[in-house]
Length: 160
Ligand SMILES: *[C@@H]1O[C@H](CO)[C@@H](O)[C@H](O)[C@H]1NC(C)=O
Ligand SMILES: *[C@@H]1O[C@H](CO)[C@@H](O)[C@H](O)[C@H]1NC(C)=O
Ligand SMILES: *[C@@H]1O[C@H](CO)[C@@H](O)[C@H](O)[C@H]1NC(C)=O
Ligand SMILES: *[C@@H]1O[C@H](CO)[C@@H](O)[C@H](O)[C@H]1NC(C)=O
Image (cartoon, rainbow, N blue to C red; front, top):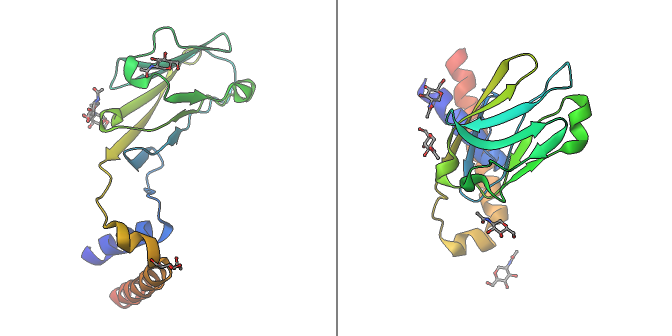
């Protein structure tokens, strides 16, 4: 169990990006962007994006973005891809996320009365010594690969 946990953590480190195995969960650090997917097979519908049940993220009404009732915490932070609407792509991008943007997002498809649920976890940016970051990228990379291989070996042994 512990090994598997380490393995996942290592993978996250290696890619330099956090991805979770559950495709409905997203993890980001403060300042990042995240694209929350929402696809509707039947293509045409009004779509209401909400945060923590009731907070208005944005609406798409009659194929148009409607921001009049957008909550202030989402102002100037959302992007929607209007060229995708005809194909039923109602995904949105949140930019420059803050801790407050954590929580549950729902993409409500009015036509079919469906709710797609997504969860976003926003974490504080880890405080890193500035010097280390600058000059040792090659070094840390090979160190990461070494640790990765070690963990992989450990994992393999674990299953034999
Ligand atoms: C969003 O941008 C507009 C125009 O740049 C600005 O007037 C408004 O104050 C901004 N809103 C927030 C919440 O930052
Ligand atoms: C939404 O819910 C999450 C999880 O409970 C919380 O961390 C976040 O602060 C909430 N955000 C708002 C704006 O209510
Ligand atoms: C978000 O959804 C999860 C899982 O459905 C639930 O456990 C949690 O309480 C919800 N959080 C909020 C702030 O609604
Ligand atoms: C490492 O830092 C030194 C001085 O701080 C600099 O001269 C050198 O170009 C840097 N090397 C790399 C690979 O960035």
